[in-house]
Length: 355
Image (cartoon, rainbow, N blue to C red; front, side):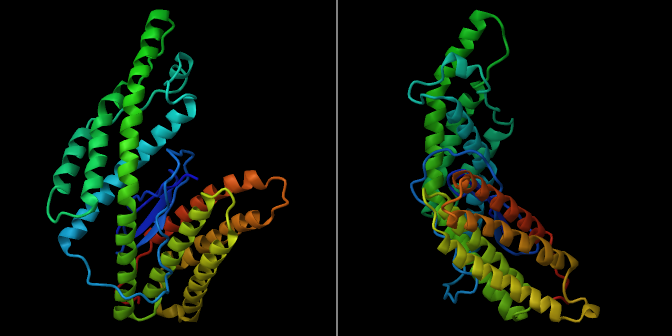
């Protein structure tokens, strides 16, 4: 299963890359996670990050991290956001075309849609900036893994630039291109492996940090506004996040289990029902809910429910002839639906009087 993700100060989106990435999506100080579809799978995952805590689960949190720690995690997230998508997708395309990864690409493979987009002209400066910020205090357990990812990005600069196959009909030039791709192949594989290893080690730390941040924000919203629209909105974000994480975990298994997804879906549906009930109970004349919030509740929220339910039905219908194809395709639909919900969430804006 492939997934790419967004992380940010508000709503994040998961995207498929064999491990969860996070792409920043910010607005109004809220938090969630979304996931755009991708066909790439860089390598078999050694493990999945834990699903976020249920949105309404009572959790006792420790003190909030200091500003410097938050900034350091912000650097992790910025790098994962900017760099992981291209790395995972390029590796996935490469390994899907090269049959023997130990031997490297044949000449036919090297000259058939195998060349890569090179890093942009500012990449080296970005990598230098990441390293500078990662070396700042405080020193955190994630620094080692993040710095290894920077090392990998720098290591990949040259081979990603050289992995080009100019069109030619001349045999000698074609042979030269084939030889060049043979030379860059082991460098690409080594750099990609180093980046993915660092990512897999760093991602659970970021997942824990963002999950605690989300729950802390939910508690803060409740203290400030009570269990009104802002609280229900934040609760719905966390429930959606847990739901897509549950779907993602099962989609990575040879034989997925529908029950964990059903449990997460029930929590999500309850959060949505509570939010809609509160919205319907309000006096429309008092303008207590933002129009963008209303649109999200009546449109994108039920769409995710329907899409997840289709995947659950496919898991449970073991006699269906098209079950294998459905189990492979439907998670991408879930990701797309979740992304749409996240986009709507990112557009929700509360005024000062709207609680």
